[in-house]
View: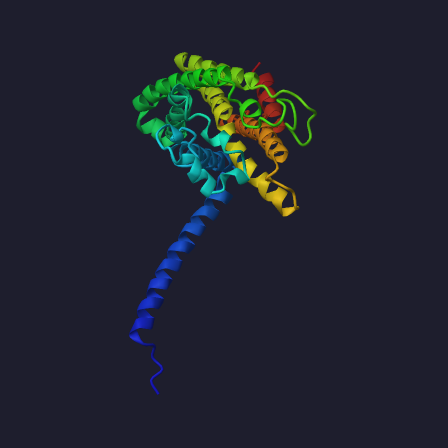
Length: 304
């Protein structure tokens, strides 16, 4: 009997072997990167990938879904959100409230897309080295957008569109704001001051050519904006856990508590990661070896 494999099997097995060889190659590269590079370098790479993902999330949030400004030109937007059952996470007003306010869309929502899109390019070492002039010009534009975003926050505050003022009308401003914290009136002012201060210090350091200080303050400035994206991720996680343990996550009190606690957690996580990145970029120099130090002193005494 002829036990030779048919031609189609030889071809398919050859393709599978080549593909598996490619997979093994890339797995080997990743393993090599993880074992041969210092831990701080790997942490910086992971933080960069996570930061890029959060930037893409924010861009998708504004341009695709839920896009609070869509109702400006799309009359059926609220019906679309209802069809998608978006109110399982937050009240629909939280996703549509900026529609009647074109000035807020133009000064906060839409500029945040440009602000987020610039971050992966600005942070990548290769892009900074290959396109230094683009990095400098785009950086100046980026800081201008940062200021514009805070003007948009001022417009939001003036219109009293913050979540605890506008989106839960049946609840008091300081009612059901957290699962763990006592009743209080949430304030965005400290985050605004943090965002503005870190931006000013980052820009001033760049103007003074203090690259180390500039990059440190840029990390903190990015955290002052991307905490919003972290909050969105935490909201989904908290709702998933709440439903898994049998909680009523359609209840407005629970939704408001989730939104508030997710904001606090988002700020804490973003700021903590920014500090880790800033420390890993410029680690402290290692202490001198005791033996080498003693040997150097001995040589100094002999020369004297």
